[in-house]
Image (tube, rainbow, N blue to C red; front, top):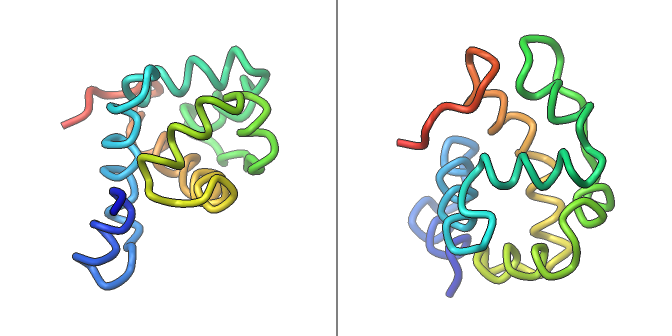
Length: 116
């Protein structure tokens, strides 16, 4: 049973409020380490404009599952999916849907705040 299943089971369905904790917990088990590590990898992988929009105060640019796969690489994606307890395609879909908001909420002043 993966983290996603644990949260899903505890809540009946994954609520939007649970997604940041789910993402942070999965990142902690990878060599990305945390949201800062993920952001750095995405910027280096060519998603700088999207990341900047999430960190800034304007509208968040969207990101696709394919863009995330290309920026993170197969091994990172596989690790994250494993820790989410989801197939790779579902993990990427979940990240593409929630990552812009998670980063936006974690960076109220334009920089990521330490996870609590």
